[in-house]
Length: 259
Image (cartoon, rainbow, N blue to C red):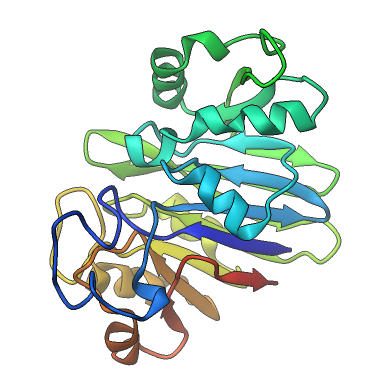
């Protein structure tokens, strides 16, 4: 299994507009964060999770050329705004609609933002088309399974995702954009080779886990590798990572995990 981090930043991105702080002006490329999304390759199956506003540029930077289907964790702008650029992958699929798995909230947001794309096929070559499907608790595929669990995130729930590859049995967990994890989410995450957690900033936030909160959850799960994502400009990569416990690191744009 390979996981490609297309973006690891917040809704504002880093560098932020009109900010001259040490992180926003840093020459460390790991501090340059586009909005959070990942691309998972599981026994040759390409799955995209979320589409940030920079999605097109992320795909070009990481040379993403395939996608079997798309999963939307929730309908906030920093995770959905790039979905129009899925049009290229509809072309690459021979003019088929892109299957989009989401929650009821997520599907409602897609309908509101992209009404022209809700169709079995694109209206013309070069257009997007989306086939919306409610994300099941367990999606069984020849290449493995993708389990989902709801995570509290302010006034809505996001999709937490657990990928298990058929050939290797390796498990990968992606829990972005949440204030806490349910007991079900923690149980699903145990035994994973790598876990990704929302670790917005050092200070508390009403709808995201802070770094101290994420570290407490990481200890409870006990994965060999834990990566923090959805980072603001309040966390310098090198300085913050130097203070993290063994086994916990900050994700960065372009990071590739091979599990």
